[in-house]
Image (cartoon, rainbow, N blue to C red; front, top):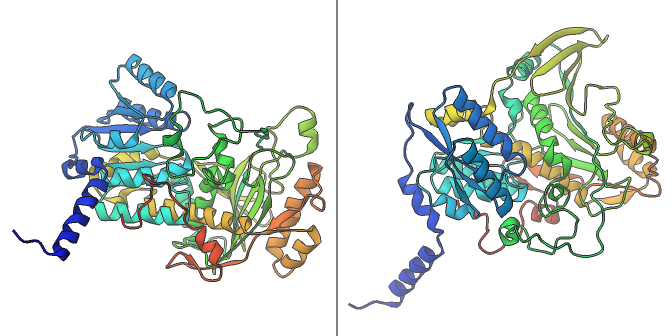
Length: 495
């Protein structure tokens, strides 16, 4: 048999591609169609924190008669994994433990992968799972950058998989009814959609050199798509939220929930055409990198969406008295997190995931909503119906709201520190943004932070093509819409 050079190169390329293809992808061809009465078999990925709630969600559904069962756990911490498997056995559940997600995905007896790993693993874990023929429940934010979120959406649609975002407020009929009421014009035109995350966060400390990785943790797998660098903070777990390589700050940690609700009220289904952010990490010096004080201004045509993050207590006196749990919602009140939809005829306050209140301009309550359904129930019902339109928080919604957090962070990361008077001068033509900054400055002053001596960063004014999800005026900003991935952990351009 004669083989010409072109055929040889083609055959060689196909062979190389075959060896480069992860073995778990062969499971996709064997994925089954789940019937109305079939058992749904679930794997929980990452359960040292939020994953515990995923486990509770499945068990709650079981108690209500849902035919769903946990069959596998995955965690890169061998101690966490061993304890989880042992606890499951005590509860009468037989589960298989995995350290490597790729090995788990080779298991054809798994229908659903429920992901609660750190942020930097969300997108790749979801895409691999979908490619392997699994439906996915994915914690927020769904991505670590804008590129990743769009790739999850593309993968879900290409493979016909059900992917739910863990933004529970989308299953609140109270908020849904409030959104419909406002968008029907009952309070007039929306002037500002404002999300608030006022959650005091203590310093994570400062180390003088690399921290040893515990022997029970597979650090290569823990890093995954992120750079594998020495651990330059005291704690590996949780404090990854405050480091750019792995987290998104409180904007992407807690704030994604309120960002999502604010966008829901506006009815926007694309990224904002313009964005800028002001912020910094103030009040202490530690190994954290993300802002603990920040506001993001998304300049939608209908009305601006403003998001505020405050990681310091209401005042320095709270710290002096040994506390960190106090917060200050300014004129909004209502708790440590909230959404306030300011309209011509009043405002709507959403202080949690299951209630909302409408108030007129005189401060009189005119309407109230309450109640929410189970977000996990909604997901597993959609797994049976095979309709992503049955989801209350389809992955597209999760991508858009997560991306609004990311673009705000891109702006502040590219910013330059300015004196307070310089910031006010730049905002003088925008009264709403200036008022937001003045309240931020007052809050910092109450914490004895001198922003003249330790100034805030004023982020780049960024313009975006919402259809392409690319910035139109800044090359560096576009580079930050994705990242350099480690070999073996690449979020693919073609899913």
